[in-house]
Amino acid sequence: MQRRTTVTAEEGLHARPAAVFVRAAAGAGVAVTIGRPDGPGVNARSILAVLSLDVRQGEEVILTADGPGADAAYDHLAALLSGAATAPSEQAASAGGDGSPGPG
Image (cartoon, one colour):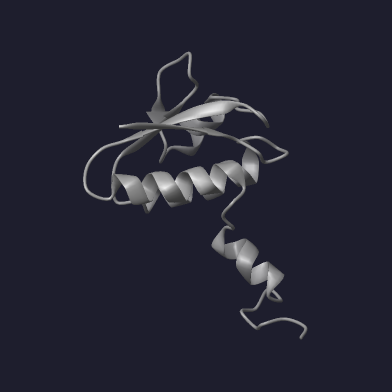
């Protein structure tokens, strides 16, 4: 099963966005690959493999996963790549960085 999505992060899939994506892929509970439409997929749990794709803002990628939980993995990972989801550390930072609700 495959799903296409567009990377919207200004940095593309480099440095911090790649690390957030890899952590989410590692916790997905299913094997996930990510690749460019014109090339082979790589292990989404490997930061070096993901960085080697050199994906930039606005480029499309293909996520592949199979098995129970694949749909949930697709939804979460695609949301991270498209900017629709916030990483847990970003949620903490927007709430004051210490888990408190922030200024209110």
